[in-house]
Image (tube, rainbow, N blue to C red; front, top):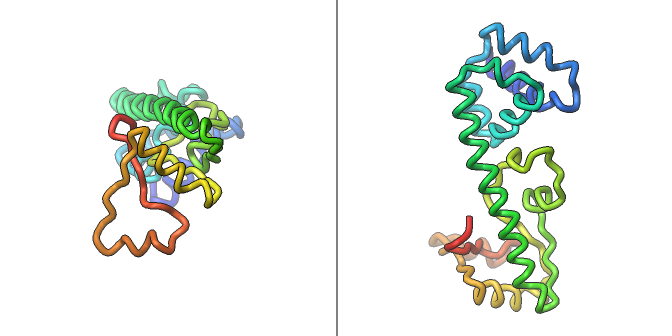
Length: 180
């Protein structure tokens, strides 16, 4: 299976819920022994879709056709990601609880927004790195102060990158030592 064929196969696996007619084609490829599983895992991992592939296989009855070691690996990655996402949703709620009393209503963007909206069939499908939020410019200084009082710290900015944030639409990243 070439890289292009592998990408196409992964896309079909991710589309199973919306296109049930693909199930037989995917099942034939899986049972036919033509899928290079190590490359599949590397591709799914490097494109942050391995948990979504796992749940798609599970929902569509493909999981029992996979090698047991692969199933367990995918299940482990999925479980780690699902737990992390549950904690991210809780963290979003905590951020809101910190900011709401000051009249600051953050707008969560990208992955956090999609998780909070319940867009995914399974919360563990989406892999995320951070929580993005949008605030009116005037609310940024008080929000930063509130978040810092709530235990958030600014990531140290690499030397030479300080100027990047000076004229950028993002502030330097923040993190909470007790959160994901």
